[in-house]
Image (cartoon, rainbow, N blue to C red; front, side, top):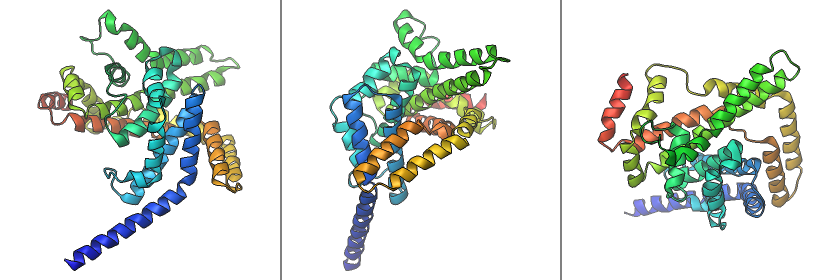
Length: 338
């Protein structure tokens, strides 16, 4: 008995020491997140700022998992990621604005939609099912972004506007590719090719993070039940079957490689190295946080290289969420044997 108590006390001390060290080393991230939350709440949100906040959350969540070794643990409150999540969730109307209003507003465009979806994925993958996933309109749009239309249920006029909005990112990518093809042999061809690559990556971002958010929504029984009746299991399984059983290339892998090659160009590396050096010369945490915000916003989203992996991860999480529904077995087996 005494040995068990001593072991428990030692475990507590170790957790406290790790937590204190992690919190201390994450002060810059916390202050940078506070600055971004304030900017996003007071001013019109920009895609670069939303991506920057998502990046900080992702980095701190990964740091937490590396330290604790279990991403299902509920002890995040003592770590920077827990502090940052509280900052985001406690800010009045921020989730309403970014997770609901902007996602349902077609005028915001694919770039901001992708950024908001990335932030929602960073939050919801940790917290689980919560607002804005409690809103049917949001879940419906996530489904359309992630899986495309249901031929039978989505052919009526009632969903026409939502369906068209969900296709905006893909439509923009298709238009950019057509423009690049039309510019062949002209001085603007290289610029058109770069624009087409950016548009295709943005469309992949929208699909990837919408799928990740939808996977979390499917962990709620009422949402999953409704989606099962729509036959989503087969549409989730089909690309996984092609990837895992037929050994076809992972969806988006080639695009990610092209985008990563562009983002690691010499000029970009020089800009990031200069920004990092400037940040290291600053004395206070506040100055370092401001430098971090400026660096992340200037750099833009740096997730292009991992989008294909995150899309696969999201699909697997969706399958796991639907696995307890007996109606899904037939669809899964059917998709796997095609």
